[in-house]
Image (cartoon, rainbow, N blue to C red):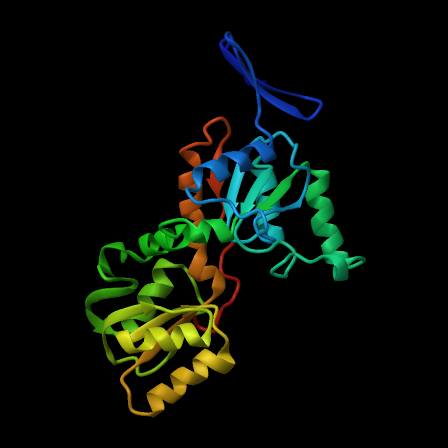
Length: 289
């Protein structure tokens, strides 16, 4: 059966150009470049034009946008899900081609790189990264989403936005809560699961950042830390007799909720095309999790 369109409004595609029409006339769909310009105006901080992260990664900026997908990382699964949903402009927080700078010089001739890039190009899709400025926004867009997902936004300490003062519980219970609400199967701990916890600090990717956070907290909640520095520091902290702990989660689990928040934020000023969040999901898992 052919769907019947309203006399007052219809949508059509001509030569790859998308437009919405009504009795009052037709409005050309925004291009990816035009939507990026809107983001730059709305983000609330000066735009750093020297960034190598927040740039177009693949696809034509002048492509007419049918829909926007906000995601943590443009995995091949996410790209295909966006295409299936009719969303041809992807706003990603993390890299597309497996390195921080999306450096592709060494990927020429790699079969997986070719398949992924060609899928995007053949389907008229565009990928643009939104990392530095989403973090630099006040408040940090990733942390706003993370706090909401954890259910801890009202536990943030008034004098330290990296510290949560929660009802007293145990390190094991904190880890279980994090695993449940962030939907991750890759949570790991350092410390006694029965240790009492009331002050949880948001850790860092770096040893220096985690060392600085440790004194103010019973436990750290750490995303994407290196095992050979931060985790070994935590091991020695516990071995020295201090009642401390670390809950270690993946990069994806620590930041994905922030891109769900990004989709909410984008909908406030991108109203001419649909905007949806697509979960990357945490691919890491442990047996029995």
